[in-house]
Length: 217
Image (cartoon, rainbow, N blue to C red; front, side, top):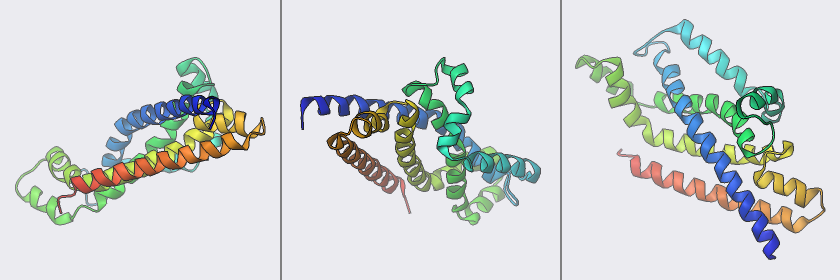
């Protein structure tokens, strides 16, 4: 492998890691509380509020139903308003965050549903408040599942960040399109695919290890 390809891959990998890490951090700050809200406001839960639950659920489902490539193009004016440009790695973070928030919300909701109802009932019988149930029972018990689900989200973000290269988002996807496809250099395309595979495998291994460590059952 030539020094040119190594240099291009290193730069593109750094851009991809930057996009995924920042997007995941921002989306998690919003998506995890969203998932908690979706679960706790459902029927029979500690903060039952079906109108609110249905309203939030409808918005989440609507955003999740939009293909990522369409979402990127549709929010270009919003992206430009936020970061001053619709091109580049920082600009790509905006659609990545918007696409990830409802995904994380649903994944967290799924993990919380797996917490045995008996634990919540026992906490309620001892006079625990809804906030205590969320922070002392639901989240700690569901944490291994949440970590596993967030690992899935990170892997999806890696794929979506590569797709962002189609509109000049930078990263490995941009490298594969501009240098591999458009310049007819299959060795760069192949190297990009290999790096993406290795990156996904590392994320999955780390996620599995952390989930296993947090699992106290």
